[in-house]
Amino acid sequence: MGLFQKIKAGLQKTHAQLTHQIKRIVTGSPRLTGSTLEELESALLGADLGCATTTRIVAAVKKAYETQGNSGVDVFAIAQGEVATGLASNDATLRRAPGGLTVVSIIGVNGTGKTTTCAKLAHLVQSQGDRAVLAACDTFRAAAIEQLKVWGERLGVEVVAGAYSADPAAVAHDAISAAQARGAHYLFVDTAGRLHTKNNLMKELQKVHRVMDKKLPGAPHEVLLVLDATTGMNALNQAREFHKAVSLTGLIVTKLDGTSKGGMVVAIQKELELPIKFIGVGEQPDDLQPFDARQFAEALFRQA
Image (cartoon, rainbow, N blue to C red):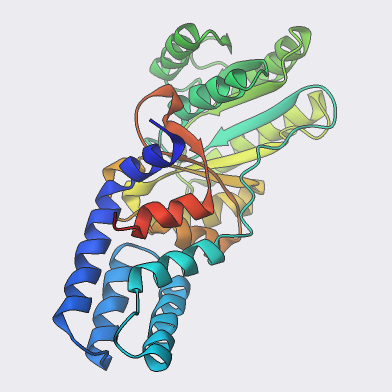
C-alpha cells in the first residue's frame, strides 16, 4: 500500500463522516442559504477542524457561490484547498543534530501510544539508513520496559533500559552514553506517561531533559508530544500545558484510524503553531507516517 493509500485508509472514519454530511447539505439545498452555511459549519466543527479553519472554509464556499452561482461549485475541492493552504507551512522534517547523536524525547499522557511510537520512529529512521537506539525511561511501568524490549527485538533496534523504578534521568544519561559509543544517529527516549495537570510529574520530566542536556549539550534536540486523536479537541489542553513545561518542537498524532474527528490535527496545528511531525494510521511498524499537508487534506475530502 502506497503512502497516500495508508493515510486515506487511516482517515476513513473522518472522511466518511465529513463527505456524508457535506453531500447531504449540498444536495438537500439547491441554493446557498444561511441555514445551509450553518449546517456546513456544524459538520466541519463536528470533525474537530476548529473554528479558524471552519470559518475560512465557509467563507470560501460563500464567495464561490456568490461569484459562480450554484452550478460548478465544488465544496469538497474548496475545503481540501483551504486545509492544504492552512497547513502549508507545516515542517514535518525530523530534526538532525549538526554532528553526532540526535536525541528525541517522546512525551505525553498515559495511553497515547508513546512506547509504540518510539519503536516505529526507530524503525523509520533505520529504514532510511540511519542507526537508532531506544531508551526505556518509563521506569514506572515494568510493562513499558518489556514492551519496548519486545519492539526492539522485533525491529532489530538496541534498547537501553534500567531496572523497574530506576531514576529515569539516570537511564536517559546512560542511554546517551551507549548510543554515542555505538555510533547511533538517533536516540529515541520513551518517557513515562504523565497527566499534564500534575506539577510534580512535569518537574520530573524537566529534570530528565536537564540531565540529557548536561550529558549532551543541546539534547533533547526534538521534544515530540504524542496525542491520541480519539480524544479530539481535548488534546489541545494537553498540548498547551506540556508546551509550557518543556517547549515542544512538534506533535505526533496517533490512532487517527479509530476516530471520526481527525480534523483535530488541523485545529491543533493552527492553534499552537507547532508542526505535526508524524501521524499514526494503524498498528504496523510502517503505519507511522511523516505528515504531508496536501495528502492529508486530500484524504479528508477527496470523493473518489
